[in-house]
Length: 280
Image (cartoon, rainbow, N blue to C red; front, side, top):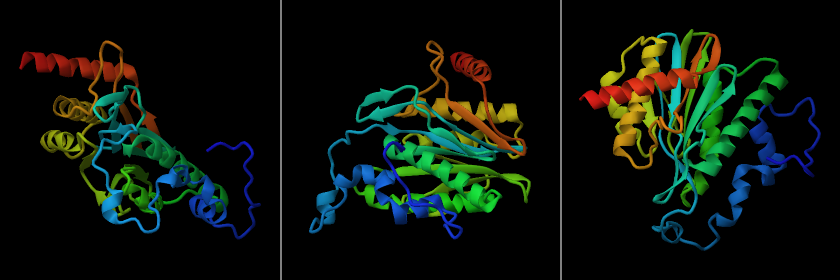
């Protein structure tokens, strides 16, 4: 959101700890949904007239996944964005750190997805500043569910946002994974999940290779294998590009916080997977 020439009401002692709720009540024009207000249903339109069968003209992020491992939880995504039958981007970021101990990945319409990730990060920071302590892991997951639910009117126009959320729960000392539906329904998964156009193919690989208490290195290899196999079957999913050095984004969340898996390690694992495929 552009801060130029934008004024917000002064915060008072009884200000709501939810920045999203505050923005909704005070300046709804600054919400991401307001950017696509012109495409909202108009009075008198029927549901049938809202649904379009023509290709949607905006970029879509595709496959993201998450699963638990020995010390925490891993979240990853490919880098491709598609626009109909064309590739819109090969370096799109779909995995975002939301605070010191949580992260989210998004699949769906690229613009609203990225806007929601940015707003959610502000939401968590705002709460921590006002309350003096961060939200619990489950509280963060609930807040994200409210934001997904608020986006539902845009789903009728193809602006779907489907996130995965992961965080480290300090009370239970485990990594936790939450998935969502388009209505904002929130569901916890104790093992793994993947969404996006290649989500089904990624889940098939995870079902075969996922094990309880995987080591970090083993978890990274399983994640890359799942995205690699999804790219083999789904045109919307981008596999590792060893020539241009474009690799999936992989983040680890544990008691130490959120960490990025560096490109050196990703390249090594991807090259090993390519060699493995060539031998079979």
